[in-house]
Image (cartoon, rainbow, N blue to C red; front, side, top):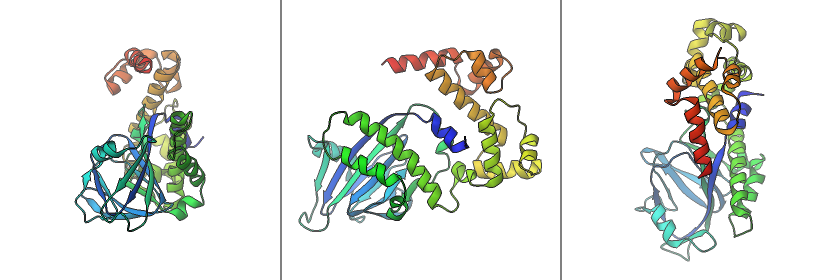
Length: 313
């Protein structure tokens, strides 16, 4: 299994809020800081989207898809020059019984209908520390990038689910949103010559190979020297290139990945501590417990118990 598949296999979306927006005329909204990841797809028309203080408005057109990843306030508008309304407050006040937000701005009878399916992923574990680190704050996939990819078929299903009220819609939208994220990241990798951050490091032949080795055998007693030798590089060159590509030192990344595996196992399984410890390279459950508490601030037992209480709520 490659490193991306490894990370995606642990990715758990606890919920995915999906909604539909339809706007005519001139409109502009401001949305506050948020947690996790926002996404959207343009079903018809076009609009402008940008992050406050970061770059100029980007035009998002029919068939395009976007991800917002850094949690900063952002704006959407048919006319970027307009003073924005409070997005969340306005949406709450005009959302219809069918869940669709319909806004009629100035010049209601003019211009095209803009229709969006959008939402927010809420993650229940810490894989996002690895997955989303150093991603561009706004990922814009154009219709040409989406149309030739499986993402387009998943978006068609999401479009149908957000267009009305159907039995089982909540679980359907949550499951589809998870697929949307996976396929969006794949499409981003396929359409970007040099992706940024951790995803980009996977496309580096040598660094990607080192990442795959660490993911395939997290319990092996890797050293910077052994990893560098395995990919045919000097220790110094490997360490420098790895940090530049991934954003952390090789063994720091390895430890982060080990703790991600441990947290997932503690929260979602009854696997004994001694087995978890052995699987991720610790000689005893005591050594693992000390390292885990140093990393998370909690003992493995307390972390597991806390996860159970959250699941029962």
